[in-house]
Length: 155
Length: 155
Image 1 (tube, rainbow over the protein chains, first blue to last red):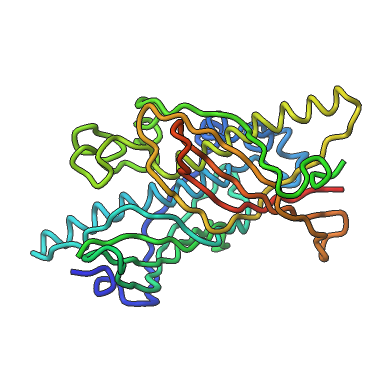
Image 2: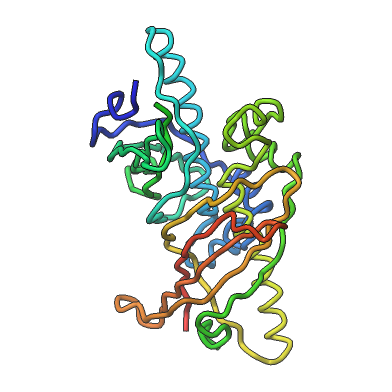
């Protein structure tokens, strides 16, 4: 089964929710983005953000984490129904990533994907390139991250 | 001092090198991208990649890690020379991120930034929006990641 048949164009699919507790925000920031507003409550309060918030790369990586869990479960579900799941490959990249609002300590982000389009890859017979819209919203239903990703599919 | 004066348009500045040992690749993947080719040597060998390689989000977060270290040092250096360093703010996002080649266990990625343009932000007096090209190359001088980032500056 192809991805474009599993999720018809324009259908928004919620893939899961990830919590951003303070400890996780600080742990990610220590490793990859040690700026004061990601590390220290007091410094964050005095910053443009007004409170401790996650590195944008943490929010983006959280989308991947949620997608991998979702896709693993989705593939299992399809296989249990006797359907061969779409065989997804790596992503060559993405477009127009926007961090729309900060993700503060204690926020929960619900991620979603919307299938946008699919096309054959001329140089690689049997490969298709899918474009999906990836989004994350906080518990107040405010958009915090959005980007368009390309995903290879083997057919 | 404005960023555009510190780094003239088109000047490519190497910001540092980050090693990707197997342990770091697996640790990041366990947290955020637990796909077989990021976790398990044998599964990776049988995959499209042919060997254990880093999550693309790890490679991207590595750019941030390297940039924060570079910018901290650069600000210190300017201040020591009596120059007020550019006051950079958060990034609203970026464009056209491309993962050009896998980053394999044992690779070292040298990251660079090239200053592309700056403009006033009409809705926010005193804010400027800078566009920078961000790149990573491996030890064989092959490009592995490239994206264009926006960075707010307060003047």
